[in-house]
Length: 209
Image (tube, rainbow, N blue to C red; front, top):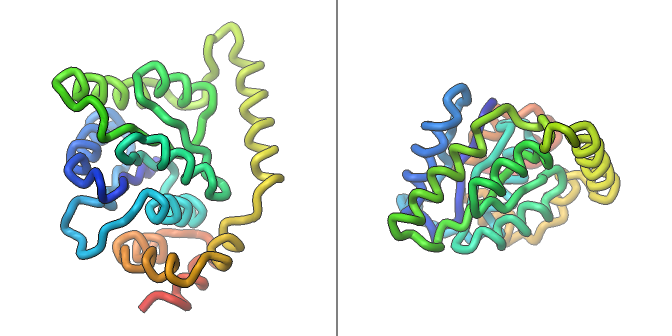
């Protein structure tokens, strides 16, 4: 599994913590850090980051994304507006485990600006530990696993039928938004070098210097 780490610039001081904690618990995964870590010349909102998350997942460059913003809610909502992205809000270990086992999505959003006392750091650590504690998509509780997984498959099918494809969405975005997203060159280069969505790569190459 390839896991991408990327969060809004408002929480760039949490980037290293996010990256290192995911690496600690997703031991068998390749974890790639896309920032934002404060070294960029540009700042990126949660909406701009959600488009990059859509790019990374739609291109097949990564399999899963761990992200966040101050509350975690805005990023979750923005990500779920991207075709093909099923993002869970995981403020606690219980939420993380249930999302991984029942909803089996491809992105999670954390509230990176909340409760960062010592207790907040413990909760953060335990949340990511629980997220990666077992293989995804096993269902929970075990006695209800088959029904839960059937509902998850149905939800994903309905979402797919109700959304346009990501390529079409990207083409329809405002030029200013596309120009801003393209300034995150590490993300764009990674998509071009690792993605398997030929049409999306062509769209990016047509815009990217």
